[in-house]
Image (cartoon, rainbow, N blue to C red; front, side, top):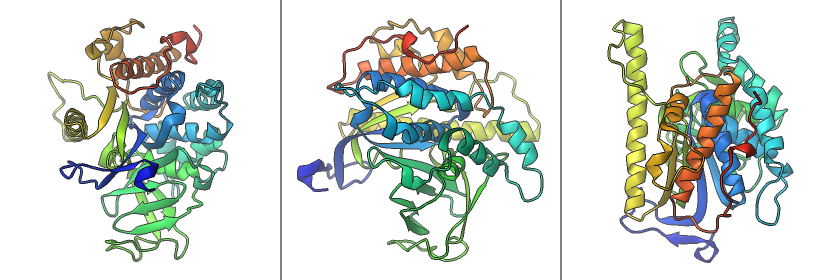
Amino acid sequence: MSEEEGVTPASPSDFLGRGKLEDGIGLCLSGGGFRAMLFHLGCFVRLNELGLLPRLERVASVSGGSIAAGALAVAWPELEFDASGVAVNLCEKVATPLLALARWRLDAPAIVLGLLPFLRAANLAAAVYDHVIFKGRTLQDLPEKPRFVFTATSLQTGVLWRFAREYAAEWRVGEWRSPDLAMSLAVGASAAFPPFLSPVSIRLPPGAIAAMKGADLNFAPFTTQLFLTDGGVYDNLGLEPIWKRYRTILVSDGGLASPPMGVPWTNWLSQAVRVTNVALQQGINMRVRVLRGLHNSGQRNVVYWGLAEPVDNYQVGNPLQFTSESTKSAASVATRLKRFPNEVQNLLMQAGYAQADAALRASNIGQMIARPPDFSRLPLHKK
């Protein structure tokens, strides 16, 4: 794309070292199991009401965010946008399959069955995603715009694999052009939470992976079989495919919020879990600080909303009256792939909707539809 078509030079001092930036909008969807999936669904509804969905150039996702993004991608060709850019059938096409998936008790049964020989829990979870959402579709069924990118972490090299319509690639191994990989496997790899739902194993067609510049591992076994775990291990905000490319970055964070523990368990297993969660949270916190620095320096226009952030902190009013107590309740929901009670599902959708609404009203993104927020437009379960 030439500069006349929307690509402009980045500042020579650009923190991320990008030479050119596109003026479009990129959306990043974090991990966090079904909790994040439902949170992002609430965000989708508000983004749609404001007319922002058709303005997206790229959607990058990880883990639970990839499940939500996958449902949006599958539905995209069937979305009916009105003259103002609002999809009038979003809830029917996107919310219906996601809420159907949210009725599954998925992680525990998959883990138990994964103990059997020749079965992997993560691949079993991927089969459920295919049954409920993807219906046999491959990455070649993704829309051309916006571009959807699902990310997973390679257990072989320790860096990201990216799965998109045009390519599946990892900079040390190489690139698979126009991959016909099942969408459920790409999403399943992105959401393969370790150690119980990990890894996803993907056998590659012979000769599928071509070398790229700098690919020092373009040989077997790296090019013949992939062992992938949750993309959140590397980047739980899904920033990597977005923040070096686009000036405007929307970040929806329904991920881990490590609560304080006055008297933590001290046995080895509990310590290992706690230390892993703290390390993951610290990585998220560091990336959020970088995002704020990029925004404050003017190098990017960042709009970030997070599950644990009280709506009142955005200082733009709270017309939905989504309280700090509700925020704490939503943030305390476990990051599981299991069925939550209807009231918890409603709370998570409301949290995503309210957070996105407040963050976007506090932003300087122009050309948004002036439509007051209203929880009644969410696909809430009836009491």
